[in-house]
Length: 183
Image (cartoon, rainbow, N blue to C red; front, side, top):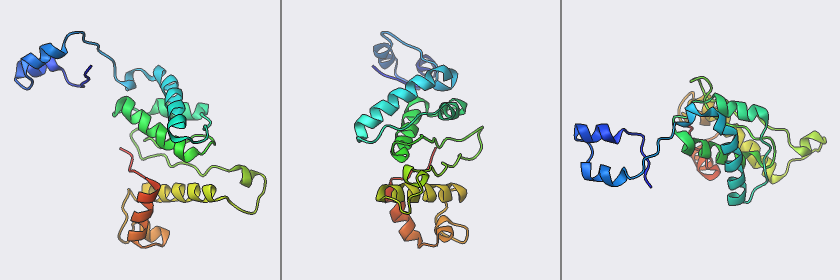
């Protein structure tokens, strides 16, 4: 099985793809529309990727809200299903069993910042945070500042200055937390 987003027949005609390879691959062609043309598949795919992420990472099952599904459906998905899976995996890790928030561009604009989620300890009026809650808040805060600065780390208007840390410290934290700039 092979997949491509190119028109191989046109590539062969233009001399950009070998004809013998084309005939090897063209035994039983399937044409699948890109995800942006089949938004109705998103809720089912999201549920599947959440299930597989929970199993793979051994983390708590997050809550997929209608707002979360609507957020996913509004996005254009230029990276197709692979991009959807990556977004969901990142969101499952950050949700830690709470409501899931997705960091996808809205209407071609800037990335929607993940909101700080209220934890069960905060709802009960606890005077402390667990280590996991502190890590989650740190991750969300750093991500929010990176988004605000366009992922600029150093300099006068960089994320490190806004956070009050050295750029090398921030870079270390970004790596440790596994934060990746959204596509």
